Figure 1 (cartoon, rainbow, N blue to C red):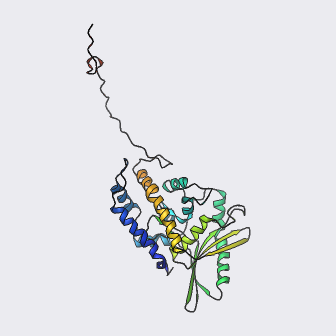
Figure 2: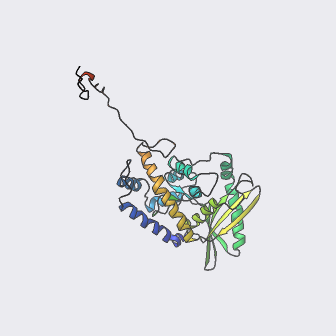
Length: 291
């Protein structure tokens, strides 16, 4: 991925917003101070370029890859956060980030994982035929890609390819889906289009390819990354993260979040000794009654 900087203006703008957020006073609330939230963000989310490279080179579905995804919104679920699917509500998706659920949990997800490599094979074949006579000179499957300027966000591309003919170069990022059957997601789905375009931007690819493979049939859709459109989507995700997800993550770390939800609670510590009882016969609130 030699051209990752061609979309760097998107992440520069987000980094500038984060710096303003850090210096702001934040909205007052009864659960935490804004400065505490900033400190937690810096400690648990900000990463160095070296750590970003470590996550990027970690094999997908390895323990390090799963660990890197914790506390972050990733492209695989970004569309759900924005309400692009009737199958996953934005509210539930926010809960899933805080109480992370990452591994395949149903037959359809397991099917997609098992057949992904075969789908990528057909997608690579299609790309090579379309870009002929350019030659495939590089293909890799990176781990979790995180731009260190926007550490709360990341994505994993299913395959990144570079083609070359003379001095001409073209790079393609593949987002591969293998539906359980054609009645499920055998369509151009907005969730997956956002994922495909986002992966192209994270890897610096010239083209995003959203591919589907099901029952020995494959389909491929090509998209030229739209910087303005993706910047707007990223800003929407950032607002969700900093107003809902991040405060919940902080409260969870402090033990002040109800398990499996984003509802905070206050811990009340009762005194260990018995509370002395008020002597009713000497209450100062009683009025003297004369007969």
